[in-house]
Length: 86
Image (tube, rainbow, N blue to C red):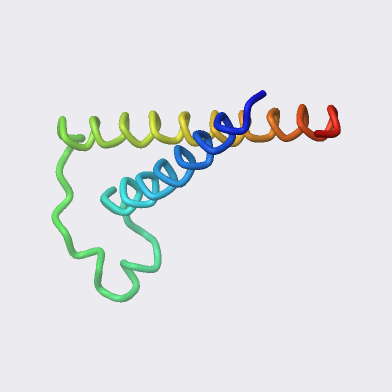
């Protein structure tokens, strides 16, 4: 496979890694963790998820799938390149 394929996957991996961190940090805490010990769990809890939270979940899963596909693609590319001895 060409070298530009690996560079494209690496750039895509860096972008999706950054997006994944941001999306995970945007999620609201579900309670009971370290943040509630220090007073962070005082927020009001609503009964059910809003549309924005559901969309945030979907985007997080989608970016996670793309991130995982980049890792698998880079691993396969590396295996092919090492196998050919180029």
